[in-house]
Length: 224
Image (tube, rainbow, N blue to C red):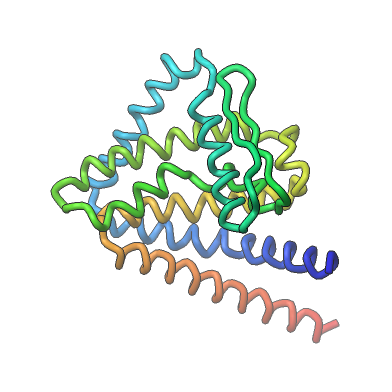
């Protein structure tokens, strides 16, 4: 059972490695299809948070990033039907989540899942189009919040990364961050169809790349 689990884990990592190229292509396509005004609103929101962080938040303890980090661990633990025993966040001592059981997805979730941004993305299609500009600002703000603190937390000494394996963790984190950046950009119009188009584009492109790689490997083996 352990061997099967490891095979599935590394097969998924390989698929994510191929998906980095596929969803990068989908992200670029989604970016081109968006109105520049929406991109500008996203950028303004991101810029506001960065300035706020640079002149104020960087000089204080990262309390809210700790809260988001631990809540994301807890959310994914609940998704996998794991019991969350304790959840704490402290401005000076950091945070802690104790879960009965666990897996690499729960461990890595805070590094690839922008919790606040995903909440905004899911809200956008049910909000009036006249208010989309405000949600775009908030989306940019929340994305920058996630990535500023991600760069601070992402280092080889992190226990979450070491438990999962550094190389494995890097592949998973890069893929899902590309996925969620693309999802954020495709959500700017506030339409479900744009989200589905982005996901379908990424899946189809990844499938095409995977088939090309398999065909290349097959030809290489035949020629040996």
